[in-house]
Image 1: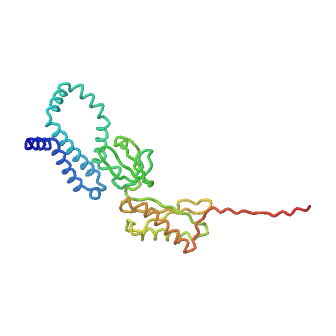
Image 2: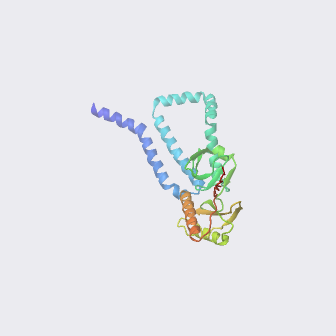
Image 3: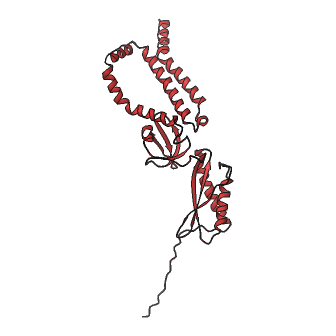
Length: 271
């Protein structure tokens, strides 16, 4: 009796559990071989990884369900009414297949709109860095650590602004104002020097510092901080800005700010 029970359990596990176990191991091998850090920047490999994973799990589902007589009979019934089912499935999967084909088209083209790690703005969404790209959606991480998931079909039909393309790495601008009386050349030199010597700066030459605006109280200087990985960019920008302010203070370069002076008049009244 015990042997028969164990045999029944073993057959059940082999039919319904083993396919998913094999699929899990295969998917793990694929994800390990095609890790994000290895395929970063190559949308074709990112989509290929998702396709292989999807095929593996789909095969596991069909193998497990195929071992069920009830599923086989149901499938035969479905095939007899294929026309009705095809319409229902077509309507239900229209959006899903739209996302899949949009993802494949964006990754297969020569002029790809972005890579993993690029800083982009898609449509009306807040700008951020491309964290992941799947068959269904694009994941954007903003500077507020908000994760925005945008369907591929929406991405393909939206206006995409890529702030990183042509620069290499992940880039973001920092700005700082200096007083009109300050030595502007020295201020720009300090700004470029601080950014260039930061350990996370990604570039062979010093960044270009530009005059962005001549405002009411001072001159606004702007430079782009580039890092190899977008995860480092926000912290690097913060550290560079703090170090620039320290250097300005040390060398007597004034950073303008609003000052409020209160004048109080004493009026003596004769009785």
